[in-house]
Structures are given as structure tokens and as C-alpha cells.
Length: 618
Image 1 (cartoon, one colour):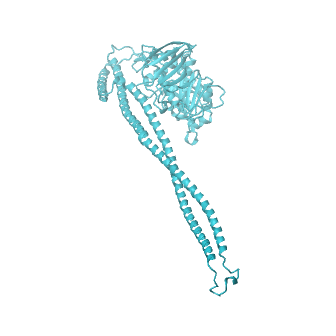
Image 2 (cartoon, helix red, strand yellow):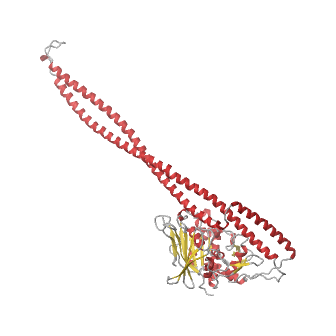
Image 3 (cartoon, one colour):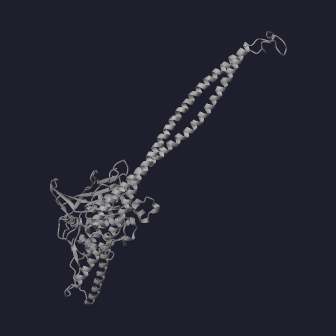
């Protein structure tokens, strides 16, 4: 068996009409996509999972509005051929294209997104074929019923999201009791390269009655489930497609709602600016009006003073015109009075005229000030009226245009949520029916068995095989500078690793994330070293979760120990040096160390105008 089985991801692209492609490119070996939250890292991981055959598309986000297809390009390790899978977010078949190592097209066709046990030309069949796993059989229950392997079974051990990576359960187990047998068998298949063996079991005759009672109970439960599904009034064949369509429509409605909301926020800011401008203009007008009144009153005083001075001047002229007489007091003639004591009307006239000239100059200055105040008042009035008109225009736009759009988007979302809830309820009933039917089929096979046959046990990996896998994990943990790492073994009872005598899940979430990563990468490393089938690619979301809380007061003692041991630097250095023996794609909030001795593919989402904003350009 050749070590060149498997593939590595070359690129992930999201496409949409009238939208620029949103693309991430990768290389073989270590790839790190880092950056702030809400930049599209987890969405990108979900898109890859969807391209790997996940039944549900990624949960919609506003930034993805307008994109309707996921395109994944992979390179086969054996022939270096390029395989491109394009899958619509609304569901349907997959457009599959194949190219030779020189880039020449080898054909394009449509393949089913659903796995088929008899058709290798499906999405699952092609990926399984690349991984060297097509046609492999795994047990589904303890009685030995088997089915063919699906790539979804394998993807579960190659792609780990941020919730699973810290979960308190074995990395190969989802937590579903129905799937536990299959999940354990898939893990064993990868560790050993051997399919599940055939199991013959003897069912004592005394259990037949119990089996028939169970079948009757299952029949009643299926009838009840069918009735509940019929009451929902949903088409059984279009549930998945309608859910995908609703998710796409919800994304568009959320985007429209967000655009309208942001426009309202922007207009409200303009509204506040114009209101402030109008208040300032009106406030200044009050000041100008007060000054105008005071200066007008002062001008009136100047006018009165000027009139009095003119009267004094005229009085002097009249006095000079009157005939001279002897003084009525002393009887002396006018020419005999002392000059210093004599009243001289001509001097009073000159003084009055000079004072009137001064007041005239003051009145001219005052007239200029009043003219400037009048001009300023006119300008302020125009400014206030313009601000008022703009306020009214913005208010009308918000009330007549934007608010109806927001209400309409909210109403659409509400209606879609109601429909989506009903469809999800219908999907849940269908899944329950499927499980009930599968269980009923198993029981029917038991009752239909002929005479008892000798009992055989399923193929299980030897202790030595599991020790080799555990040793591979141990070597990784040592390379990652895991503090105090001792012997690593695989517990058959717990179906999980025991590290230095302690169960893996007994540690805090930071340690669980790191050891889950070591489990998944160690499996890849083990398969590549032993030339066993494996996709040869691993994707991890937030494996260094212990480093997301820099406040030492909020982290546990184990997480502090990891930080102080330099695990982060050793983790990246080991994977960059090729310790995984395949492709590893890490999605993490914090950036890897700057001064890495080995090169690797690095993509940073800045969430700012500097550099790449995120998965989707801004």
C-alpha cells in the first residue's frame, strides 16, 4: 500500500453572482488562518465541511449574503491530479471537475452529494477513493450488521470544530448512542487498516417474544411519528432543500436588515449634526438680536444728543442777534462787564458744533456695526432654515423609506423563522423515523435468522496496534512540550487516551483542546507512517484555546502550566517541521510566533483596513 494515498486541500472559494470571489489558498504541510473573532474563520471551516459532504450548509452570516456556492480544490498525492468540487449552498448535486498535473481538463460532470454503497462516482465515493477507503465495511451494531464506509465517517476524524475540540468525550465519539458502534469501528479501521469482521450471534429462543414486543412498540412509535410528520404538512422530499433555501433567504434578509439599520444609524448621526447646527444658529440669533436692540437704543441717544447740540448752537446765534441792553442786575452797560465773566455765545456755538461732529463719527461706526449684525442675522437665518430643511428631509427618509424596509426585513425574518422551526421539527421527526426503521430492521433480521450458528467475534485491533497509535500521540505531545508527559496509552474501557496515568477528559478545556488535537494529528501521523488509508489532511479550530484568556486570574493551573512551558511555540514549530506527515490547517484567534525557523502558509485576518479584513473583503 502506497504512502501516497490521500490528498491535500489547495483552495477554498466562495462564489456568487456579482460578487468577488472570497478565497483561501493552502499548501501541503502546516497552514494557519489567524485573526480576530467574527472575521470568517469558523465559517470557512464549515464551508470545507460542507464541501466534504455535510448535510447542512454553514450557518448564514451577513457577510456571506450573495454567495451561493462553495468550491473546494484538492490535489491527489499519488497522481498529483487536481479535483475541484463545486456545491451550491442551497443543496443539489455537486459539479465535479478533474485536471491532470499540467492543468489540462480531464472532464467535468455532476455527481451526487449523497453517499452510495454501490456508486464510486459520488462526492463521498471520490473522496474515499482518494483516501484509499472506498468499499470498506464497518459494523453498525453489536449483532454484526455492517454497512459501507461513508466519507462523512472519516471526515469526523479529520475535521474538528471549536466545540468538539474541548468536549468531555473521546475525539472519535460524537455522543450519539446510535452512532457509537460505527464511530468506534471507523476509528479502529483507520488505526489497523482492517474492516470490521463478521459477527454471528446466537439469540436464545426465549428472547424472541421480547424482540416481537419491541417490534410492536417500534411500529407504534413509527405510526405516531408518521402522524406527527403528516400534521406538519411538509413535503418529505424537499425538507433539506427548503431548509437550505430558507437559510440562504435568511442571509439575504439579515443583510438587507443590517444595511437599512446601518443607514438609519448614519442618518441619525447626520440628524444630530444638523439639529446641533440649527440650535447653534438660533442661539447666535438671540445674541445678535439683543445686540441690535441695544445698539439701536444707543443710536437713538446719539440722535437726541445731536439734536440738543444743534439747539444750543441755534440758541447762540439767536442771542447774538438780539439787541444789547444794560445788565438788569447791576445796571452796567455790556461793554463795561469783565471779559472773563462775560457770556460768549460764539464759543458755545463752536463747542456744540465740535461735539456734534464727534457724535456723528460714533453714529457712523455704530451704523456699520448694526449693518454687520443685520448681515450676520440674515446668514444665521439662512443656515437655520437649511438645517431645518435637511432635518425634515432626513426624518421623512427614515420614516417613509428606511423604517418600512427594516420592518419588512424583520417581518420576513420572523416568517422565515416560523417556517424554519417547522421544517427543523419535520427534519427531527424524519431522523427519528429513520432511526426507528433502522432499529426495526435489525430486530427483524434477528427474528428471521435460521438455526443458531457458532458465535464469532468482530475483528479488533491488538494491544500492540493501539500501543503504536498511542506512541505516535506521545511523540507529538513531547514535541509540543506538554508538561510532564509520561506514557500515553489507549484505554479500551474509556475509548480514549490516558496520559501519564490520568484520563484525557479529566483535565481542563485548554488541556482537552491540545490533547484532542494530538489525538487527531497523531492518527494522521500513525496512518502515514504505517502506510494506512487516511485522507492525510486534518483541520483544527482553536486547538490552543488555553491561550485565548491572557488574564492569569481566569485560567486554571493546568492552562498556566501550558503557557509557561512554551507549548504554543513548540506546537507550531513541530507541525511546521512536518511532524504530522500530512496537511494540517489550523484556525486560531491568536497569531503564531513571528520568528519561526521553518516556513509555513500563514493567513492573517486583521478586521481592519490594514491587510486582509477577513474571509470576505470589506
